[in-house]
Image (tube, rainbow, N blue to C red):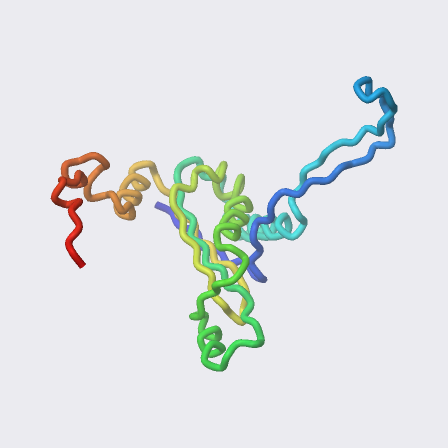
Length: 191
C-alpha cells in the first residue's frame, strides 16, 4: 500500500457539465428533403475552461510531487475541499472558519469537486478513474482555499480487505440467514 498526499492551492472548482455549440462552416449543401440550400453546421462539445484549468492544476501538482508511472490497480481517493469563507460570516462562525472547522453546505457540490479531481489525476496517478474503488470528500470553509488530496494505491487483496471493512454489509453477505427477515420481524409494535 502506497499513499500520496498533495495540496492544490487556490479555490476548488467543481466539474462543470459539458457544453454544446454549433460551428458555422460557411459551406452550403443542397438539402433534398427540404428542397433548398442550407449551411453546413458542425455540432461541438467542450468542457468549460475553468474546469479544464483546475484539472490541469491538479495534474501539474501531482506530477511535480510524484513522478511514478500511472498505477494500474485499484486505489482510494479522499478529497478535502477548503472553500473561501464569505466575509458575511457571524463572529462565532469566523472563528470556526479560521481553524478550518466550519462545514460548507452550499454549492459547489462535493461530488462534482471529486469528479474534477479524479479527472485531473487520470493518466498521471492512475490509468483511468474507473480504478477508484472508494473515496470520500469533505467541504469546509477556510480563509486559505485549497484542495487536499490523498491517493492510496492498493493491491487487489488490500482493496478487498478495505472494502470489507468499510462496507455496511460486511458482517453478512446478501441473502445469508442473518439478513433474512421472519414474519414476526415485520409486525409493527403499537405506538
